[in-house]
Image (cartoon, rainbow, N blue to C red; front, side, top):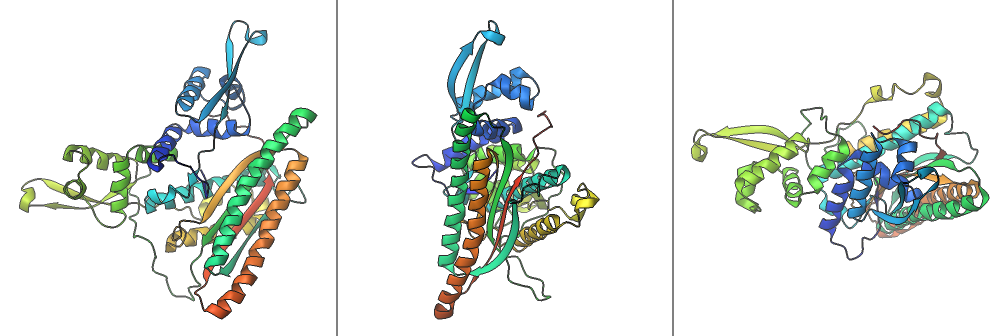
Length: 417
């Protein structure tokens, strides 16, 4: 999952969320879309390389994604090793990302959870690269973070630069794929990550109150996969509205129905139950008596994400924990976690958070690594320009944390269940 500033054109924003719900409804589908955005594949090729339970299951999910426009059928082939069978080849039409235009439609608690989930996926890529000793294998690998003070213009320019780089790396991916088809060069697997978000000011020993909505802690360890949780909410506009309102106050199903309608009260209760089962809502109080008579009215609040602590890093080999790369990433993780706790992470809807898995040839890697280095230099250029403007205008600066990574990743060895 990634959140970027790309346009969805004239398509309905709500309809795009529904389309995302199709991808997220089955974890395998997100893997299919991601891999087929990199290269064309048939269901059999995908199953042979990544698994997916069974070939028939993979084929069904290919067809479902094609029905909803996520995959495009390219061609069909018969004969040869296929004998009498026909093999159908597809490419993904786009990545399943959260565009800036639809991000405001996602309730605050869900935005925070999605962002934390995205960062957690990046953390796993870093862990895998550390274990396989690929993270620092190339001299031009990049892993850095810094915090700078920007004015509004500097913030906007930096976010635009990050969004432009996100688009550039996929252009480099396409060019590399064409070169590889001609040269036969074995591609490398690269992880590219971009993060730029508002950080809280230094606390100086004083605990900072959160700036965003007050979220309730989750009361359960949800067994529902995260992507499926997202799908359940995105598939129904009323579910999104319920969670959004529960970000702001305690809320019951009868209360929501009386204020907003949208369905029968029984239908609203079912949605509350669904959002509770998928851990987007938690019960915080109950009331009886009065107009309720002997009935019990349950009140809910939106839940915050489960934030991992230091113990979650125990799977990292002890030998790499003292390394500079590991220390750098842990520091960035702490800044990210601090921004979630204080509410600054999603205080601005035009922030940037993405990580991408690419297949590149040597020339493509060099160009992408150079582009990441250039963005790192741009951060300090924008900081210096903002310092000069702030000195004249007196504008309140925006404390901005930027994290960048470009490193070689090990090839996947775990097959999809």
